[in-house]
Image (cartoon, rainbow, N blue to C red; front, side):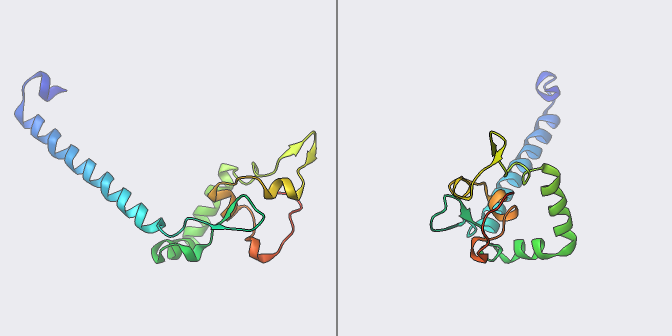
Length: 128
């Protein structure tokens, strides 16, 4: 604003270069995020509305980050702190939902991947 108001060419050129690098960094981040999560789109599970997400479907860089104990401690505390897993459990008139109701809910990737065991494990839903 100062460069435009006072017709200062130096500030206008500085603004141009800074905005160029900011936009280039954002585009680079978008490409990086897409490359890291490209194959992790979830798998269909029979008789379930939600998708199951597996760490093996993601890139090696992301797998290494998540399986590293230091990073997993931070990720786990973030998920616990957000309370997203507490919101998975629902009650109808004070009664917890039935397994069939849970199976036909649409869960977010975080809810499906972090708040419940994989369907392949064969656990029967009891509660959140």
